[in-house]
Every structure is written in C-alpha cells, then in structure tokens.
Image (cartoon, rainbow, N blue to C red):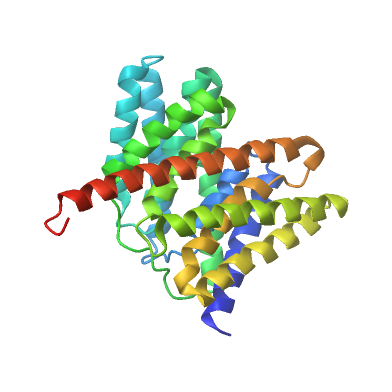
Amino acid sequence: MTDAGRAAIRQALATAGTAFAVGALHVPQPFLAVLAAQLTAGIAFAQPADFFKRIAAAWAGSLCGVLLLVALPEQYWFSLPLFGVAVAVGAAGFSKFGGAAILFAMGIGGMFSAGIVHPQMGLLAGSAHAASLSIAVAATWFARGVCPTSERDCGSLPSYWLTGLTGVLTLVTACVTIPTESVVMSIAAMVTSLALTSSGGIPQKLAGGVLGVAVSLVFLTVVSGAGNDFAVFLLAMAIVMGGFEWLAVSLPNNASLFRQGGALFAVAATILPRPEQFLFASWRRMLAVLLGLAVASLIHAAFDSQARGKSPAG
C-alpha cells in the first residue's frame, strides 16, 4: 500500500474513532475533538512519552485558562493580554513535542474563550473540552499504531507571539460578531496561525475553507437523507476524512488546501448525526471558522508584509 493510502486509513481511523467515542459519551461540542484528531493524526509520536505529553499539553492549556478566569474575573483589559501571552509561551514550550502545541492552544482556547462569555458555564465546558482532547490523543495514537506512515511535514514554526496576538484579536472579534461561537472561532484562528508557515500559505488556506464548506453541505444533505444512522454517519465521515488526507499526501504542493478543507469539514459536519437539532449550529460554526481563518490570515499577511518592508531587499 502507498503512503497516501496508509495516511488515509490512519486519518479515517483517528477521526471516526474520536467521533464514535465523544458521541457515545455525549461530550459537549464533540467537533472540537474530531478537529484535534484531524490536525494531529499525521504528526508522529516520536517517543512513547509523547502520548502523555500531548495529553499534558491539552490539560495545561485548560488549566491556564482556568487561572486567568479565576484570577481576573471580568477584567478583560488584563485577562485578554495575558491570554495572548499564555498562548505564545505555552505553544512555544510544547512545540518540540509533536502536535502538543496545537493541543495546548485548543485547551486554553476551549477554556478561556468559553469562560469569557459565560464564566460559570465556561469552567465546566472548558473541562469537557480538555477531556475530549484526551480522547482525540488516544484515537490518534491507536490509528498511528495500526497504520504507521512517515511523519507529516509541518513546515517551519511561526512566531508564537503572533499566534498569541491572533488568539486575542479573534476572541474580541468573536465577542462582537458571534459570541456563542467564540470557542470555535478562536481555536480556528490559533491553529491556522500555527500552520500558516507551511507550504501553500494563505491562498491555499482560504481555498481550503471554501472547499470544506462545499463538502460539508453535500455531506450533511446526504447523511440527513440516509436517515441519520450513526453507523452510516461514521462510515461516511471516515471516507471523507480519509479522502482529504489521501489527496494531501498524493498532491503535496496542495496539501494545505486539502487539510484546511478537512479541518473545516471536521468542525461543520460533526453533528453525530442529528441535523434536526444541530444543522443550524453547523452553519454558525462554518461562519465562525471562516472568520477565524480570515482574522489569522489578515494578521499574518500584515506582519509578513511589514517584515519584508524592513528587510534589506525591501
């Protein structure tokens, strides 16, 4: 079997396995766990201890969010800048442990972004998010054991301070536009910022977002017409996720496009599968992800052009 085929099977197992677990356990906002699996399934566990380091990163991010919410309740002039600092320092600290930086960003984003809108409910929701990230780590570890492949090329790492700034500005944007989707928007922006230095950059990320929306709409229409059977949903999700990863590995020059499409699909299509209740929420999540992607892209483009302007060649 080719590397692309093994990568597709690995991605399908990781995402569908995560969806099955969080769906069976009725974890709140299960799409975040599926997104975490989609983002990190292709990143190898270099050492057995990396399994625990990824879980520790998710819970460390969540704990940082708790500390900010408890220490500075409703003091946004202080908590928001400190949130950005925590994102930057935490992501940089966990960056050498594979996908741990992504999980840290998702952990702190899941806790702080939920708590800044609804403080009391946010603590419970943030803890549930951290638990769902642990499920995603277990599913990706199992999938890589069943179908090992070469490690994904993640590109050069970005400025973590820029990722922290992206998290802050996106969270402010979310509170002004779609407060109920602040968690989704901030996480989407931060993980986008962490990946923007990979090949393809902003154009492929934006095109991938549009592709993910289109595929999600077709998927939801077909699944709802199939009677909303959970097994059918999981099988269809596995096929789509595996297809995105197969394309990413087969066409490496367009890998960012297909993986961004898979990320948006993970957020939008994970309704497990109850469109009569969650279909409208899926539309809001699509919009939130696209806004988060746009904010991250604009910030990255602004600082990148400024850096080129200051270079000797500019």
